[in-house]
Amino acid sequence: MRKFLWRRFSMDMHMARKLAESEQRYRSLIEHNLAGIVTCDMQGQILSMNQAMERILGYTEQELTGRNIHELAVIDSSAESSDSSDSLLKQSDNFMLRAKHKHGEWIELGVKNVPIIVDSCQEGIYLIARDITQLNREREERLRMEKELRETKELLESVITHTTDAICMMDTQGNVMSVNKAHEQIFGWTIEELLDKPLPIYPAFLEEQRAEMYDMLRAGKQITGLESVRLRKDGQLIHVSVTKTPIRNAQGDIIGFSAISRDITERKQTEELLRKSDKLAVAGQLAAGLAHEIRNPLTSLRGFLQLLQHAMKDKQHYFDIMLSELDRINFIVSEFLVIAKPEAIQYKQGNLTAILQSVTALLETQAALGGAVLTLDFEEDIPDIVCSEMHLKQLFINLVKNALEAIFKDGRVHITVSMAGPNLIRVRTEDNGCGIPEERVKQLGEPFYTTKEKGTGLGLMMCFKIVEAHRGHLHIESTVGQGTTIDVLLPVME
Image (cartoon, rainbow, N blue to C red; front, side, top):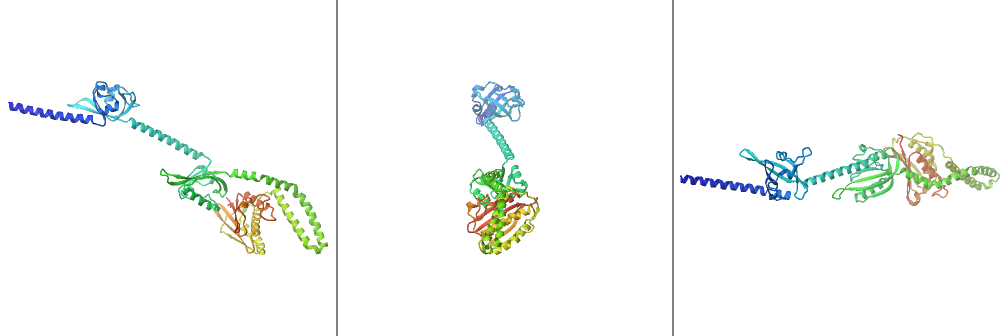
């Protein structure tokens, strides 16, 4: 019997030791857990809590033991907000809890309830909590920043969409990635026509400028307020103010370019009108006041000279000089009359190649007499234009005669007709004459400004007016000692 009792006692001691070890492991698991753990009975009374929960709430275990959990925490739910311990203790899934810190501020906890089961009966519950206040603040801050970013993006998109300036985004090769509505309205091409292609808005004579700009952008330089001309889809040239900027990524690498273009055609036209208004006013006044008064005595003088010419045949040389000078005066008076009373232009369908063939045939003899060569080359199937053939003949006769007067013996004047774009024809007149200094080229076309000894400056002014009346553009480039190139760009018939 004693032996049996001893064995029973040994077994009880072993079980007690095992139980103590298990409880110790349990306490260690609870105490050293990084999550806050509160033990409550079924009424919500706090029985114990670990050190992590003390750090979360700011209370010691002794301060909270015996208090009810609902005094400190409520379920964070817009649909259900209650201080009932039952509602809190009956939660099974993960849920949000708002608890009051010892210092008074509310903190947010992510909680999971784990039931305490003894002999198949629930005697209490573990609330395992994690402080997510900072996470929620960061989430709210992220949401706030995302909202601000979204609103900023929408604002920028609205500005880009509704601005009157043309905006284009390009890759580093100059291929289009996107354009805004104003770009489509100003230049005429849709995004579908431009996407992944180089911009077709540069006239042929500005290819060098285009290459220089892209070199500057790739070098990281910004181009601000550059005033130039660009080509519309319909072939019309417009004046623009351009700002181009390299686009960089977060690492500072250039990944593309932005281009903002403002249509300043009306402004440039107004400036040009203002700049020339004084001279044009003088020309108009001279034309209106003197042209007819001069022409009448000229007619009389010429008639008397012709009478005297027959009577004084030995002075024939002098008569020829005087008659020639009277003819020159009469020509100048005629130009004055054109300024004073411009002739109405009648437009109809015409062909530039045919017009230039006629002009070349007319002036070939004059060129040959001066020892020069006049040639004409043209592409096949040049489309027709809407024009006044008479005025275009006047234009090209004037340009070719100016070129012939500028070259030396054995000189050359070459005319080419080609397409400068899908809707634009270029007529280029080149000579290898003496050339014109750059500072004087800018003044060509102004009334009474001429580079010729006997010129009036009115002929080239009329050339500019004729080109302008045909919705075209006249561009002059010249190098002293090498010659002059004049491009006339005219839109094809729609």
